[in-house]
Length: 168
Image (cartoon, rainbow, N blue to C red; front, side, top):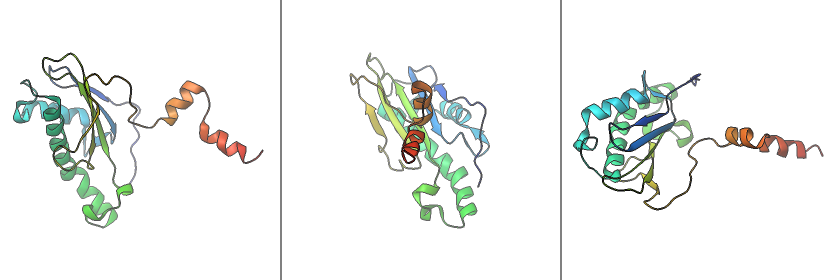
């Protein structure tokens, strides 16, 4: 199994006309399709009308979880099982790539946002996604690799500094 490296990829999406954004991290695609193409499919299917009606954030997040878990199990799981020679359920967690989705936005008719995290295939069960920031809980969260950003902001790599200390 080899990793694909992309020079660019769309990582941010608006969900229909709702005041909800989705950021993707981890896997860049599922099978031969992009995460964005699946979000557009989700919008067109509009399960339980969460895209077109005034559904709460928890309902939107759980429908996204259910949709992406199904896609993952249909596309990624069989490839991993075949490549590693085991049933998908028997694979160690460190051999299973994750699709992360950060879903942030405003519940209908509300003025304070919520931030949710979905990890596919980790969040298998209904309502298992994590509410990272509820309404009025303002602040920031980091959902992906921080080291490259740290190097960019601070101008050095902490791991390199620790390795250099061994020689002093």
